[in-house]
Length: 230
Image (cartoon, rainbow, N blue to C red):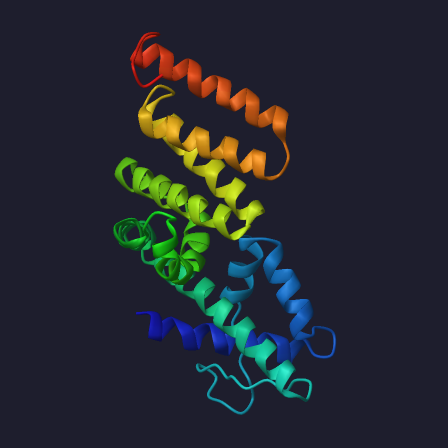
């Protein structure tokens, strides 16, 4: 399936850039594509036939600036857009939710906690977790697994100093668990606490303190004032 979609992205992306040249460089195209997912899917839907091929076939192989660096930029761009083409294909055939849930489940079962001994695995999976952060599932079970992936990713991101990603993922995890589990669930408390840690890592002491107080209050309501863990 993915192999069928990748040539589509390469063909349509390259053909679009070639047709628009010199008014559209690969860098301008990338900038437009990064503005929103609507822009990406709109451009990928566009059929741009080339004279050297059959009218029903698409072409690849745009001319670009000289040099290895420029060539690598093309490759990075096309690989990125092949992912968007895959998403578009899945949407059109009604399989996007199914594939997203399988992907999230796979991450949830393989992404470990952020302990030092797990860093090699975390490092390999972290880019996939960042990709998953942009594809929030709709079903409850998948959403809770997604929140777990975000939570474990934050742990690793904080250890690596990836503070912006850490806060974004922590907030996503906390919000999903609040919606599905409620404020007093222990997993919601864990996510809230790691958001507070993300705030602390950025020097946002007031926001961290306010959230820590909320976590303690929720814990008190669940465990009681004299619980030994308090």
